[in-house]
Amino acid sequence: MMRQRLSNRMRYHHRIAGWYFRLFPRQTLRREHQNAERKILLWLLGRLGDVVMASAVIGAIRTAHPDAWIGFATRWPYADVLRHDPRLDAVICCDTPDQIAGFTRKGEEPTCLHVIDPQNVDEFRSHVPDAESQAARGYWWTRGHVVELLAEATSERLGVEVSDLRSPIFIGDADDQVAKAYLQAQGITDQAKLVVFHTTTSVRLKDWPLAQFQGLADRLLAADPARHVLTVGSKGQLGLTGDRVVNAHGQLTVPQTAAAIARASAFVGLSSGPMHLADSLEVPSLVLFGSEYPGWAGPYQTRSVCIQSPTTCEPACCWPCDQPSFCIDDIRVDLAAEAFEELMAGRGQCGIRPDPS
Image (cartoon, rainbow, N blue to C red; front, side, top):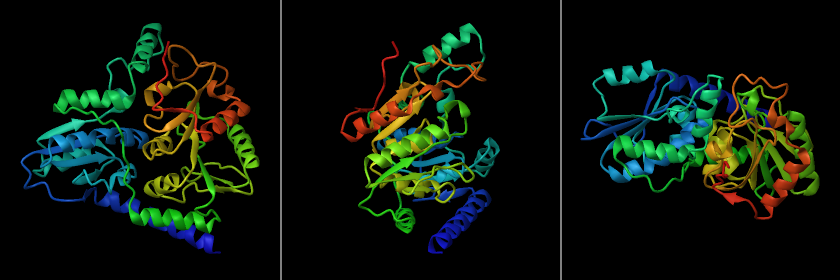
């Protein structure tokens, strides 16, 4: 009964927060912009992982312009993950470019509008499935990590040198307490070896079959009776089963999810927003890749093991996929289990960027 009341309360507050940000898109964090001589607005209409990776440039901009007003505009609910970032003066929650246009029409034009777009940061990106564009995408994917390309773009457009490429996420005390209370209500104490799983993305091409995730979770739980598994994700997604498995889909907000991941001993998942949260929080991670190149958008700063399907198309896949099955399906459960134990033994690389050759 207590668990059900806690879950219902979390869903209610999450729903209210969503309507609040849509009705009142601007949230001031530290100070108003009127008295600032220089106003810098960072604008990113991407997804959670894009926001986390883009946060790497905030510190360099703040260092170069300590007195400037710096705002960050992005979609709700991803904007909420930046709410406690002391380097920002404001976060603007927006779902469309029209909302940014409305913001600037109110006499609040920034001195500099820096559009951050990790998905189109290089001119070689293309979705046209022909040989020439595929070769271009192969070049595009092997140029470097998204964080590095964002740093280059920031240096070119703002004249700011980005030397520290870490992407810190700042968790508020309230979100941390909610996450702690949720875990304790599910019987997961601070002494438990918590492993956070993220099993589903918005793109089937990137998803490992749920049955194989279940097989991996069963192996990890059988290997250590102190382990508990927490699955995170959106409401309605299918979860895992087991005596020491808790499905938190739709139960936690994005900042609360980050707080839960921060309490974990390890993260297991896909190329997704929660993976980037784990990377930012420096939680050791096992990440499974199918079509994507780990050196492009994989873990950048934490110790990790990345497994890429042995049947990935080269130089890069095309979408829609024309193969009879998705390449990520070919990753074996036993291989993933062995890689996890290696990760727990202290092996793995920090900021993995495999050589594409």
